[in-house]
Length: 335
Image (tube, rainbow, N blue to C red; front, side, top):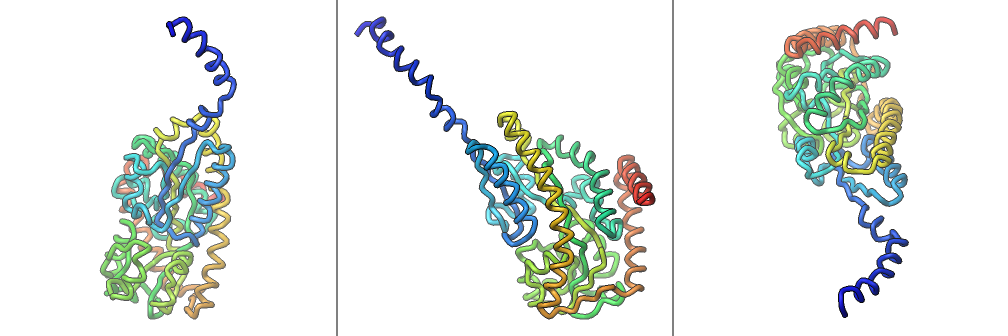
């Protein structure tokens, strides 16, 4: 068959194929991976699954995202770097855990700076542009942030003052809790959430500060007797994705992800407020003694520690930090 005969024979088949774009549509389908360190029952993970379902359903099958929960793919300290290097396209991080990279990531980890959800929303709104700019420089896009419920102390004796914590082996999870432990005379030990029960069982730690949601996740009633909710912090988890991976998607899918992220943020705040109540009730049902309200002396001492740590944070956060704290204090004074 000469060349002209071949072309005449091939042309109708090519035209017919162009009329049925099924194959190209299948070729455009993408599969992403997402990592989180929290278990499936945690409200952050529940919120993520709702977020991912909305994205997948809205994409019409063009994007599928597999969630690897409970540190099954990457441990918490590995997730941010994993998104940066392309191991996964999306991940959830505890923002304050990266305070050593930049102080603006950890402002919500300062004890007693935020003592209710209204203040937490104010701080989150003011902190967002600083966080976005810093993540953008690292090739990351911030999709949404959701707070934890108020945190409190888990101990085997009642916490009547900070003196109770002196000499304890104190579980920490970011630079701020590390510094707090030092200030109260405790021995700080970094322990990731999945490892908390074993750390208590083996005596590596015997006290910690975290939310009631995490307390339920790790079944704290198996190793401590008391929970003292003090509004220590309302730190935030951030869901991030690779900017490069996001920009490789069609514009409508990029908008879909961003819009779903906004709704996930709103839903997450509502869940956090609900969890603050229901998870404390769960701890009490499981036999733990929940000291609510906490002792007045303890709250006065915590306020003093918080002021000390705020001043220390300002000393390292520079002009951006000063602007943020001034704006925050002015805003909550009007609330």
